Amino acid sequence: RIPLLFTGYGVEKNKVISQQTRSIDIFPTISEIIGISSQNEHIDGQSLKPLFIDKILEEKPAYIESNPLVIVESNDVIGIRTSSYKYFRDVDNSEKRIHLYDLKNDFKETKNLADSEPEIVQKMESLLQEIRYDWKNTEIESNDEETKLIEDELKKLGYM
Image (cartoon, rainbow, N blue to C red; front, top):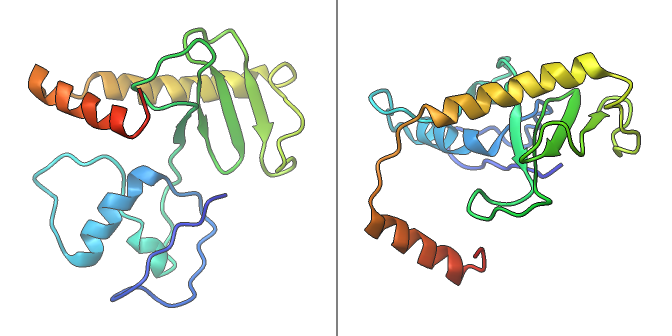
């Protein structure tokens, strides 16, 4: 569990939110806090600001992976996390290295339930495939020059 802190104007002091959040939700939250409208642009994630005033947001599964998307190695894993379960498996083969943990009853993730709970594994895999399908259908415009600049910056940061 990594803390996510918001502080400043419009943010209540000492408010603790226990609902799972995602890093993809940070930008829309900051945008709403500072009053920048993003209605005309497609932005992934949802604002967490309603949680600041005790409203309930629909929980969305968080995508997880072992390495950034720019590095592909044979032992990488991908998966999703909800407040109830953490599921991950081999990045290239959905039949390999499958892990499923019950986060409510096994918060230290000591007992892999993948073999004993195939229906939950299938449900989590379906959620993972939905997320990946949505990404594949999102158009990202770039050119070779931009790609080279990004790769150079990532190399400087030690990612490649």
